[in-house]
Length: 202
Length: 202
DNA sequence: TTTAAATCTAATCACTGCTAAGTTATCAGT
DNA sequence: ACTGATAACTTAGCAGTGATTAGATTTAAA
Image 1 (cartoon, protein in one colour):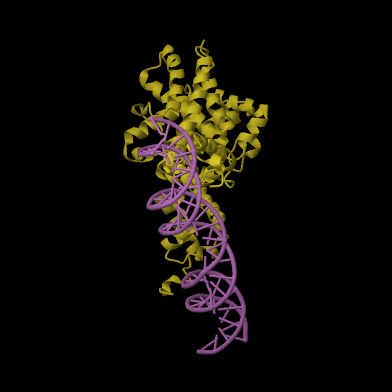
Image 2 (cartoon, rainbow over the protein chains, first blue to last red):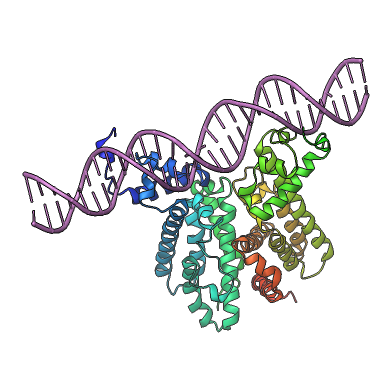
């Protein structure tokens, strides 16, 4: 033991998750080894195993963390634009912008994960809290315009696919960085989202 | 040398690509090591390096292969439904169905790749042949309805994002297998694609 | 028969996940 | 303040995987 401070870190669990997200942003998903993170926390390679059963459990915890942050952002948007016509566009923008700000979170959340659920049928709802936020925002509007229940789910899925696809495209390469720096690019992103919004409800 | 046949395989390059795609379908992206593929081709671990400078070059070649097959499928659809109203839906279905049939090709093509290009601005066109197929199918229609040039690109991107997002969702987990087995599910997939097609041109 | 390409053998190097067994800090109960 | 239990952490090492290269060997073709 070289370093007295090293013992009883106190917050190693949180520290590992924090460093995990940071490392993800710097090196991508492949830089995510428990050894690496342990080193970054100034702790031995075996220490993480006191807090996570194995690497998979750590990844799951990290996915939960990311999902929590994403849903938090969506929830704020939904509350803020509640009852406004533009809420669907704003929700879409929030979804995409979360990943513009954290491009590496996308692949962590949606690649080779048996933990985060995809949604394609109604019975899957509830397993993906981000999708549920979109649903909570859209359902009142769809119902208000008398869209039949069956069609609502299809519309929801199409909306999700649209923003999810945009997020996927944006996370590839350095498109995200361009969007972060160029407000003009951000504007054209909103235009893309608006394409399918159809005629304004009169 | 145990096996006379092993020498001068003759087609090791193609064989490696072929086994690569096969292994991808069985074990996913993580099963893709040159050692593994060499073994599957009945060849030593060093043999692949006579045909590919390093692993990255091999992956790039594999991506090219996948992109070629995807574009081939899209091209057939585009020719088949040329001048029909339903062409956009059919192109979208082809895009998604390619990945329904080959779920693991999606992540190979679109994860951590500096080789396959994403498209978000007009000047990027030409770098993604799959997107270009969608464009070739849509542009005549959009022009026919007098959509301004600037708006066309946004509509195209929205279309791509929609089908790309659907493909991404479908490739997660085993949704693809359900779509392969359940014709009913396939039908609801088409419904989702139709959601944004708007009123039929009259 | 020469030559170059294709392949093999053998080894190096750098990772990683994980575990066992020992060490230290903390804290509750006395 | 003492003590023992426990949680947090360390060192050391195993086992496995993978990329890559050097140098020898074989085949096919000119």
